[in-house]
Image 1 (cartoon, one colour):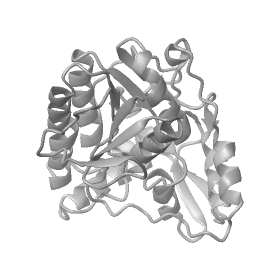
Image 2 (cartoon, one colour):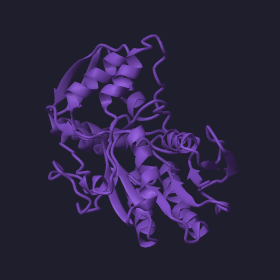
Image 3 (spheres, helix red, strand yellow):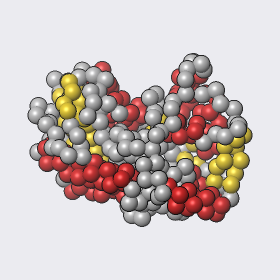
Image 4 (cartoon, helix red, strand yellow):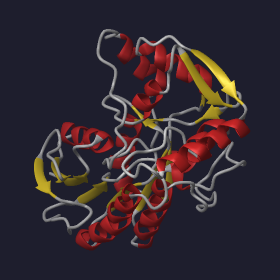
Length: 322
């Protein structure tokens, strides 16, 4: 029986990986601060300790500190301790075991030219601490011969980040978005979990992971909000106005070091331009993302009275919605 160590298994992405691995007959070691949904708990504080990976045949590293905090904040410092220094400790403990390291499309250089992003797109110029520390962490993983997965905007059951943040932005039945609608890649958490378990046999390197086709931004947002029982009107802000508002919000957030700004330049960049991941490299290894946003919406629509996810609280998290 294969033994798989899943870091961050109590978080969003990690819990799905752990549950899928167990359902396929693997023994699962849930490595992190809290127990995962299955298997045996191995306590680990990624910011301070070297994990005990004894007995593991494969390591899937999902643990991460996430958020969109301002530079120099305590949250930004915590991200480096987990996403970079924690990665170094994990790789040391892995000691030659195969490692699948879950990164993020946030590592890619911002701006235009992302209508079809391959893994060769520049990794530089990230707009927040999360993107910068994920880029630094994945560089360590790539140097160590790991398989690095780069999903974008992971969503699904138990999502504590993407959908809650979207719901929190609706005010008085109105949602303001930067610029006209664009095409965006999203990643169902099930597709990411499938890739995590398949990637152990892939050649080392970076792989984009996303749903089979990109989505129209406004149409997708309306569908998600309707599935959660929220009716809203979408209005478009000029991108320049949105960028100015984000700059002001980030400046104000520096006065409150334990909170994230309501709007950031990173968020505007991620919503105002088309960002489509080319997943052909992963598909060449036999992986196919079978889940779509429509599957998620159907699942939500079965229980319209269920409470909506809570918005994020702006502190350190684990196992991000990338």
